[in-house]
Image (cartoon, rainbow, N blue to C red; front, side, top):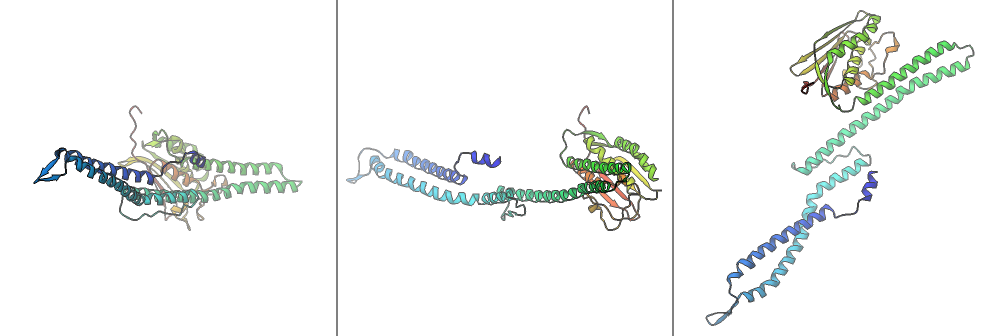
Length: 374
């Protein structure tokens, strides 16, 4: 569509030609004004009548005009020619950085995101534009690389339940005495996991977008709701769940902040001591810099993973035990969703693996300045 629009545009003068004509025109007008000043203000004081001095004829105004007029014409023609040549050269020099940026844009539109302009020289408008373009290319390259990794991982994760389902069906087709009820229960479990994974993928995608119409949200209320809904899971696993909630206003979207809280509390319960006896503590309070949400849980020490790695999609720590209930195994998307939601809210996420086991997650939000009447 964009190429069709470009082809539909009628051809026009290039920027270099326009600048050249501008330079030459300005120089010609300035020179013509200077010559006009000479013509009008100097020659006017020369009398037009015949002038004689010491018996010799002195050129009068008419004589000077006849002698001066051809020179003026040739001077103006020379100035126009000089203005065109000089303007063409100067315009080329001035637009050379823009040509580099255009070539880089063409390479980027062709799929080459590794190219950088890296324009040398002191800072000016063109170099600011080139630096901004380089930063944009770097950001796009990073996003594309992340998207490719995410797509590959998501395809693998979505393929797994489908492959399991096909295997179950094939085995049941070959086994005449297969237990259909057990098969249906297994298929239901696998299908539920696939749906949960698809929902998580959609949430991860939507949480990467910018906020629209944010409003003040009390995170402490969301924590209480999450604790109430996840309390049965915590009791089933023998995990104590403690909530210390002080009012903490965040300017954002409740539809995103709610899954943020749910994911953090759910992860803290699931990734805990497998034999029970663990704990999860959730705190909310205001700081001088804004609202803060803290989630601390016990657990077994994690080996072979760092906090940064676990924030990536589909990453799970090998030493992190999730308990025996595989219904809550998850797809490794919870912390990635949390990170995206924190990012779009302009907050910071500090995720620390504790040496004694468990983790501490601290989310700091920007100060909430509710509008009047909110």
